[in-house]
Image (tube, rainbow, N blue to C red; front, side):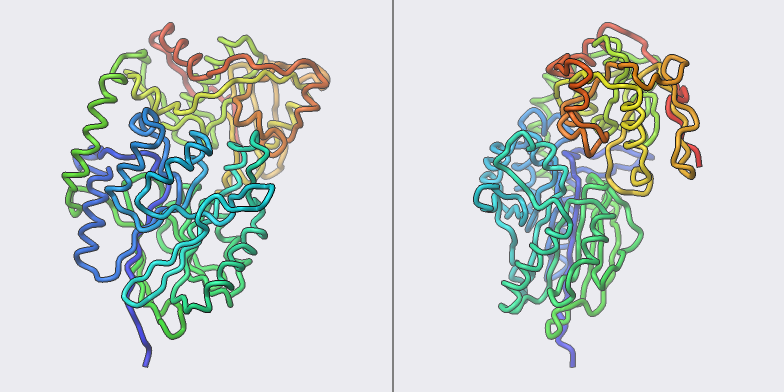
Length: 488
């Protein structure tokens, strides 16, 4: 006879400071008050409940930005996750600040492969074992290579960025702790859904990994994907939904016997509100409203940014503002740095900072037409369109690109109505995050650019430049102009 025990596993990822509910179609949706209410409700109804978060608690709201994540940790302490792994945005305020914030957390923050280069000493607790109803549940945290882009200036910090090395690290931990009769093993990752599938395929079944709960790619699923007998899930982004497993664990085989999984909507129809948590959040909101309630500008109409992998009206406006203000030929504005799906028509400072949470320098690189062609081709590689997390860019005015996915070639590539001159020098603007990762993001090295002339900082804060442009230009608007056309 099987020895079965039920485990209810709740999971979120990429919360990004999504603390407050919104009214959508006349229904209140999301926010940590109702999220907490649902989690508390499940904990009352079920015996064995674990709630975990697969990275990126930080960024996306003025409450988070104003207090550099300390407010987020205090809110998370009230939400009460059982275990959390770090995501790339946990490093946005600096590694030293993250290590400080970890000390403020009342829950374990785990990561197995972020380490000090000189002695390979891990910076975080690599795993967590939850003891529940006589079961031992092993959690292991794995981080995305994107963290390196935030810490690459610090030569002391490193990570096993290769998936093969991450798999080996998982095997090392499983081999060490499986002998103490681990009943269930869960990997909390922040590497993206496609990378989760690759990772699962590399794991030795003898290690006993049962589930991968992922983040980073903001993937919405209708059902788990099984690779190498490992269930892989992710719960989109924000607090509008939560993933829920109800698993019958065979504690003799230390494996899943049966399960159900769903993406549960967080809304007022079936999620009670946690009023104490809501009051705590409103305390922060009242403080930030005084600072962030001022008017920045008014657009002629609302500007959209619905996808990172296409030309958008809001993306075009931002690229144009930087191009015009900084006196460069072309601005390559990272799509992922624009964090709102739309902005305006009335733009308050709170809207502005939520849309542009980063405050980086802008660098000018002199590149040849041949090099610029290579750079654009790099970010249009097929992985950008197949669900893998790659960097993508919004183009400033004057650029016209028609890219054939089926032919993997340019049908048109012009600037100012003329083909790019192979040896002509163009002044290209890039934000620091992208400047720090030129080769992987854009297939060019700093040495190649420096051979064409001086590389220099044009502005220490691109957010300051955009804000000034918005404040001095009322009734701005943009349409889809065909700057970037993707065929097939």
